[in-house]
Image (cartoon, rainbow, N blue to C red; front, side, top):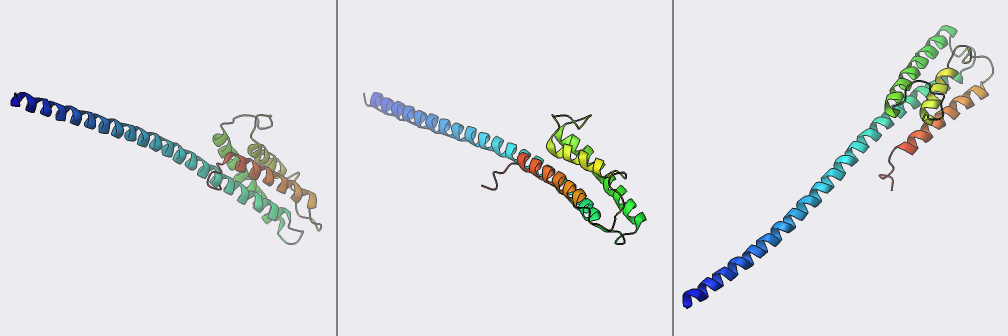
Length: 173
């Protein structure tokens, strides 16, 4: 009888221990699942952050080029040699073309950039490249080219606005 009682106690202790171990294993499993979910969320956020970073860097290069265009357009006759002006305009236009092509990769757009489906930043860069054509972006005159500068700045604001709308702002909040 004593042996039966000890067997009963031992069985009960083992059963209780098995329940406690099972409960702890379940809790550990749930914690592991939550950690995996958080890890996946962090990975997705890291990928999004990298994409945002690349878009911001591209946008900064676009804005740097566009700012140089505005500065070139604000020059008056005599402030820059004609050959230097033409060379600088060509360099900036070539840079804009390269940035436009890079932007087409970002936005996964190919072909005509005049369509309604074209992202505003790409459309503005396309229009900026058109504005730098030698027939439009002429040599400096004695008068400040107010309309030309205004048009360039309008395109720059379109690029900024589009990039701001695409980049996550969760870090601002």
